[in-house]
Amino acid sequence: MTLMAEEARESAAAVARCLAQGPAFAAVAARLRALDPATVLVCARGSSGHAGTFLRYLLARELGLVAAAAMPSIASLYGRRQRVAGMLFVAISQSGRSPDLIRQTEDARQSGALTLAIVNDADSPLARACELVLDIQAGPERSVAATKSVLATLAASLALVAAWTGDAALSAALARLPERLAAAVTLDWSPLTAELSRVNRMFTVGRGPGLAIAHEAALKLAETTGVAGMAYSSAELAHGPRALAGPDFPLLGFVQSDAGQSGTAALLADLSAAGAPVFAAGLTGPNIRTLPTVPPDHADTDLLPQLVSFYLAAEAAARARGRDPDHPPGLLKVTRTV
Image (cartoon, rainbow, N blue to C red):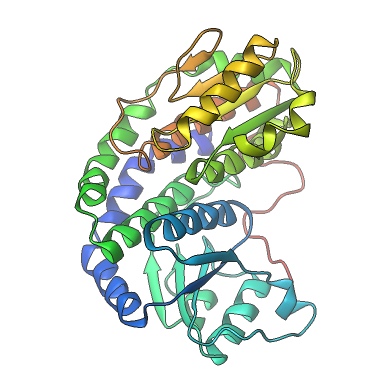
């Protein structure tokens, strides 16, 4: 078994450890309620950036915040300090060692933002640069392709929002999440693996928080299988990019049962009827190649079991294509962007 597969299968335990830190989430949430910020900047790159997109959607939808992505190069390359006093600044990184994230976080704290690190190493330079720290407790991750740490970061984002808003339904769904992740690693996504073994490009599609999952899937496709993944919101794909879809340019949809479901379903059905192979998690319909999922529970937590099933399908496709998913060519585990 590859490290990527082994670590993906450890996701249930990693998420359980993360979610067991109830007092830590409660303490951070109390500080955030006291601050009551109108704006949050989320600073992250790569898979952590996709987790940041997930968090931004949750904060905007549930708390009405203006939730934006930070631009680390403004500090690290251009030397400009931004006016962030009174804002919440969230830095997300598995390693906590990217110089550009550290530099912008230090600048943000010095400029009067409340800084929060979501990391897998509470003693990392990024964690030390922040006033508040949430340790995702994913444990060591050896494969270059991050899996369990991404899922733990997504779970931490959900737990933070649940604690901040007092959302009892979300908290209850999070308590059930580890068991659901354990079930998701047993599901058969081999039809997707077979498709990834024959094509060189694929659209990944989501809406709202699901867009973050689509972006993460696109990255993992490129990183592990060599398939060029292109992630789009279903609202954006409905325009010009849809012209690319066809027999050799399939689509993979991540669909959750919220306000975005009907529009995404309509687009995927339309493209399937036009001849594009369409695979979908969380969606059934004529000509849709439905991928098995655990039974629906909560619209947002349902996305995490979909993602762990995808990770295992991508790992199998990488091996089928003669690639080593643990050691993608030219990539390192820790990216030290300046």
